[in-house]
Length: 403
Image 1 (tube, rainbow, N blue to C red):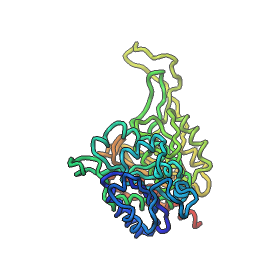
Image 2 (cartoon, helix red, strand yellow; image 1 turned 90 degrees about the vertical axis):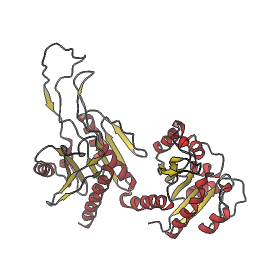
Image 3 (cartoon, helix red, strand yellow; image 1 turned 180 degrees about the vertical axis):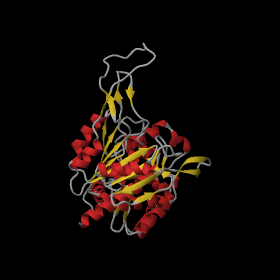
């Protein structure tokens, strides 16, 4: 997957810079072309000669050095890159980049590139956990740049805790996975719905459900990781908005329907993981309803069935995936929904099972296909399940392409 890929590797002034030598070696052995930029602080820990010999290319470090084979070096490197990797990423480089500072070759190249950028933070635990550093990392992620989480263990400063640069093989695997995934859904548009919808009763109260959005957000992130253009339509959720994708925030089922219908026609894949409210109040009180009687009745009316409408609008080649969260007759209800709503497959889970309901980090599902196949999966993280769901999507795409 890395053969012929051009990776610009930025080395900064942290003690973990020595680990970058092995990372360069692994990338090159996998077929990548690696171009190294070193800050002057990095040269206090490792030499340019080491990286020149390991990478097979001259090392760039000075904005003002004599140009040998690029017109404007930082622009050439920025345009050259299929990916930029900053390792180790110190608090300093993270902070400068987040603030838009370009005062050396590395920061200038970072701001000039349009390639995916990965930071591998490595620093003292207190520095890593400092709210300012956390804010800077979040800022970069919100702009679509990636963070490789640090490991926990013994640090060079003599303490133990989070902030250790992951082993070279782990950093390499992240980059390898990125390129292998990108090729699969590149050029495809994937629409994902997530979380629950809420229906107001009065200005204070609403009808809702327990959906957190964790499953839909995991699917959206995985689709993005595999190279898709992702649109996430989300009901209210406490989750952090995924970076690098368009997120449409809605509250009611009607608002979600409007957003989804608007995007649907040019989507290759729609995955409806949201738990929408099936009913809404027929009349919404203008003011807060005051307590007066021991009981209160609210007249409800049916909401539009978004999934069924999409099934009726689905064009040849489009893939439509639904979810069925049930408390009884799981397979029976899921199969009925699959056929009635013209889905390609449906993900069904019994929310009464331990660790498989709303708000859980894990899920326990069965995947039903139109051909009658039922795949029963073990309990797994929602991130893992997102990958399996997208594997099914990709397999269906391959089948469609052969027709």
